[in-house]
Image 1 (spheres, one colour):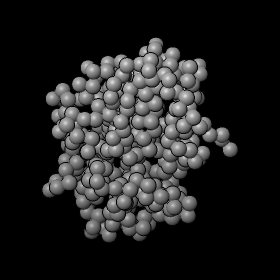
Image 2: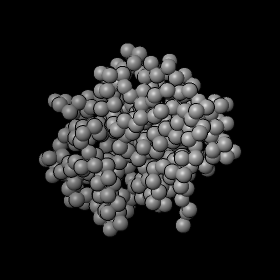
Image 3: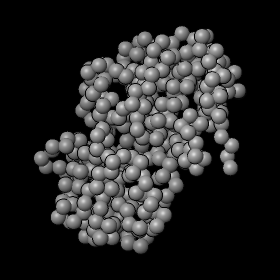
Image 4: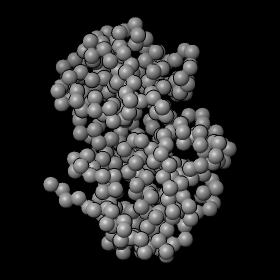
Length: 323
């Protein structure tokens, strides 16, 4: 069994370092998806212990974060913004100079798609295409497992793609899960019992690293159609696969001007997508907290985070975490 790192003890021991730095107040998003939560945890730790920031985490998701930036110029930092889901709101905020992209926080980016378990694809190869599923809905349990409503843009997009393929006529129910947790639980339960499962999921996630899944071909990427599918009331939705997902950390222009050293650090904070999936898998397999996962990353990747920091912050963190 992997021995857990007691992050609370580490954080408490770090308190004296704060006086040595002069960063002020910082607000940062805490999204509901697992990779973003860990990114926020690591970023907050580095800002607090390396730069002396007083960090406030703001519970949010894509649409609420962009709305708040537009209306209130807050929060200062959005740690994992999936650009495809941001659509015109993200483009306008950039064009108006409200926000700037700091880093591609996931490299090469995120993957959003419709999936079936590979054991189902092996048994019924026709299900690898959306037409095969439409022709054989009973083989996927007559259900598409959708992501939640309420801030998850993928829920809107998936409903529109389903409408474009007339799932109602095919007898396929689009089932909106109540949370990301129930969506994941449905996949895990089906996989363990080798039952049918068809739905949306994304990477990096621990569950996609844990289970062998096959991407369903739902057609080519049509950028115009995808943009139209962001609108829940689009009259005539068209099919489109999800475009490659650029995932950025963004910050308000005012924050970058106010805290340039912290902004420079956030501009270097990035994770390979597969390594983030591995970290999420470690967290789940070890029954670790988010804080423990952050400290696990920091204590095992000193050569990575050291390059993110300025000299003073690096010295403070090195004293705390070694290296």
